[in-house]
Image 1 (tube, rainbow, N blue to C red):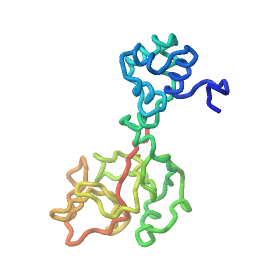
Image 2 (image 1 turned 90 degrees about the vertical axis):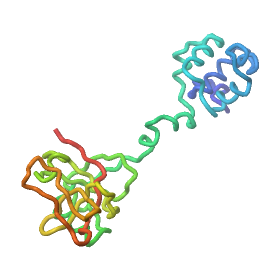
Image 3 (image 1 turned 90 degrees about the horizontal axis):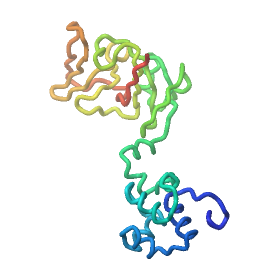
Image 4 (image 1 turned 60 degrees about the horizontal axis):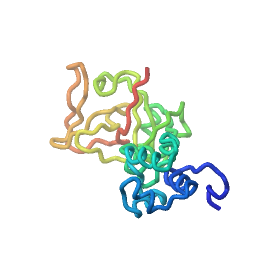
Length: 219
């Protein structure tokens, strides 16, 4: 049973066009002539293959003697929704990412299958396609230009191959540090307002726990 047959309010834009057209006793051919398109175009609107443009919606509403706001209020087709610049972002799942300490993050280098949820101090919702994540509060003058004090940094610990110029969480001597990776020549660079911090030159790639995916400034 369709929405029209059951008496329910048509949800999609295409359903609203079809509902109003049928209630008005208008064929697809007649509607097409009234708004200056072909009959297949009307059929495509009603089936959700694509949606009419904003100016066309006004013409359709006038031809069908319905409110343009009611007609435009119908849900867009999935095909059209996917064309929106934000569609890929909206489809990403929201992950509740565990906030952990630098000491616990260091343990994930030797045990990348460890569970940061078991040592979570809190959680931060993050929208990303990555699956193995944890977050850290950063307070490091060596990277204060990129990550000011009290910035939350989200690490993808399934990715240990940073792109040239990307930030990662590295293990050197002592607690892990966030630095920018440079491949030629191999080095870890600061991003600091202080001249006290310089690049760390390497003979071999530094041990890396994961790559920085997201940073969130906390106020």
